[in-house]
Length: 254
Ligand SMILES: NC(=O)c1ccc[n+]([C@@H]2O[C@H](COP(=O)([O-])OP(=O)(O)OC[C@H]3O[C@@H](n4cnc5c(N)ncnc54)[C@H](O)[C@@H]3O)[C@@H](O)[C@H]2O)c1
Image (cartoon, rainbow, N blue to C red):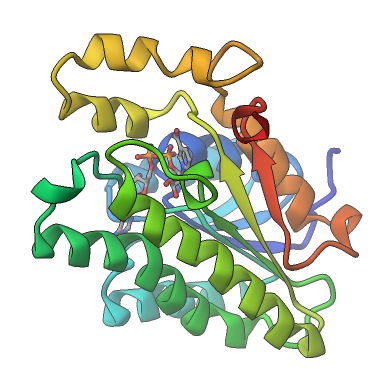
């Protein structure tokens, strides 16, 4: 829907990643003003590309596990656009590790990178969203937050908490007119699942095994998650809050 996000300001984390880049382009095509943030420098090139195409976008290189860097994201949004309508917490990291081999440091890394970072970004950006009609937050969780998957106990625990946090935020923020939803993707063709299998014995075979896990018979495309993000972020989802939208080719229906 061209123009659906005209004059809406979107803060998108993990914007340099597979789902992030596609989502940024879809928002830009719908007229949004974008604050694109990632710890990877190519987020700067993405913002420049969208501006060159006639859009409005700024880039912020920041690590969302550090409150002082997260504060720079909110400051940049305020300075560039004077407020925020939609926050998409899309950043994420993964660890594939048998439970008994997982270290305390890895536990801390996952809880910070997947869960605490959503808390930090939301706390920093939400004050800029108060009083703006249609304001909402979309947190990207995972099917791993709904069902337990092999070697994903630590990642899945953090993603399950992201769903719960989203529901709690939805209840608390309803009085401010702010909706909060989560999305639970199945395996999506981005660098993340390739990183996951890279630590396993036979990465190619492990990647091949992903498709049959989805009744639809294939893994998903980043655009299929972006479509869900834009739906939840739009006024078309005006009665949707506290939900965890599954986008998984039927994986968790079996
Ligand atoms: N690809 C999948 O199969 C899949 C499945 C379920 C859920 N997800 C979730 O979707 C979201 C997007 O993942 P993706 O598939 O695009 O992966 P991706 O690895 O391509 O992108 C993730 C992005 O997040 C950024 N990032 C990670 N930690 C960061 C930090 N501390 N500070 C700043 N930036 C940080 C990375 O630099 C990267 O650009 C993630 O939350 C992921 O967990 C992905």
